[in-house]
Length: 213
Image (tube, rainbow, N blue to C red; front, top):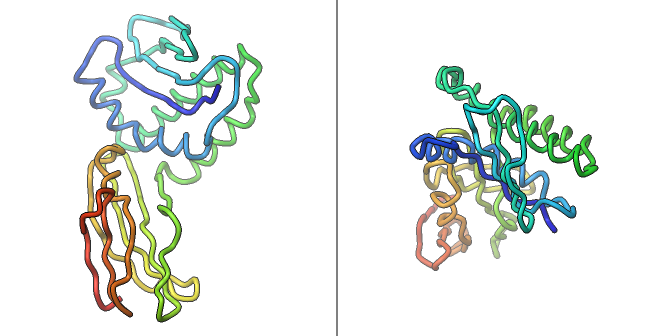
């Protein structure tokens, strides 16, 4: 089975769960983007439950590849963290949880340590280019959408390149950092002229137009 899903939540507080899922989205997305998936015999999705009543991690349930892991949690320390501190917290929580279950099942642990290092070196900023570049028919230009996701927002930008050199960047939109908020903007780019184009959403609607590019 493919390990390619992670969820972080509070064991007892629904409001805190909503906050955790929003704040951890950039780390989880980046982690899974680097991981792609991990073939194994035990885990399809890792549910990490932050539990202030436990002093050690333990697997509460394991059914059909869905692992529920209880992880120690200290609310007083958590609420004092800065945004960068929280990003560190979520990455550490994921890494320690993966190390815990991976050591039980003989996973390639250095591979996951490498992923952790990549996220730290990126300064916890999840950024990637969406889809293939859309090439202009008349001149040597191309356009592509760039996503930059942090703990508090996601920016979708239009990047114009000419001969592999970036010549212009334009902000398409700024959304909440969760995938459901920015995913509708990950559509297709259509050149409508030599220096004009549109960005169409997933349902074909025009969500951004630009000229003089």
